[in-house]
Image 1 (cartoon, rainbow, N blue to C red):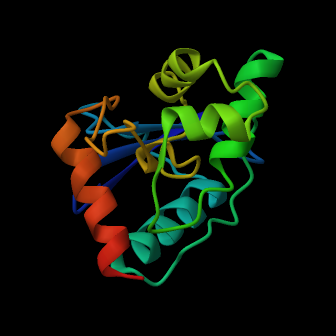
Image 2 (tube, rainbow, N blue to C red):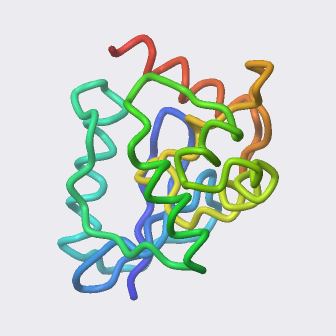
Length: 151
C-alpha cells in the first residue's frame, strides 16, 4: 500500500492505494506521503483536481465496497445520490431498503473509508441542517456548496 497526499481547496487529502484501487481517503490529513506514488494515486489526484474545479461529476476510480451487507447496501445507495444534491439520512435508509435504520445510516456515513468517492457529504438531516461529518461540519458544507455552484 502507498500513501499519497493531494493539496485540495478544503485542505490536504490523503489517498491510500494498492496496485489496483483506492483503499482510503483521509480528509484533512497531516500524514507525510510516501516517497513513491502509484499510477492509481496519480489518477486519483487528477480526478480529485477535476472534481474540485467542477469538471468532474463522477469518479472512475476503482475502490472496494467493504463492510457488512447493510453497510454495503447503504454505501451503494449513497453512490446513486446525484452530484449537487442532498438526501436525508432517512431517505438514504429507504434507498438502502431499511427505512427505519436512519441512525445506522448515520453510522455508515461516519465510518465511510472513501469520502468524496462515496459521497457521504451529500447526506444531511431531515430538517436540512448539515448533520455530522468525519471532519469539521463546515468542510461538509463547503463541499455541498461547491457542488451546487458547479451544477
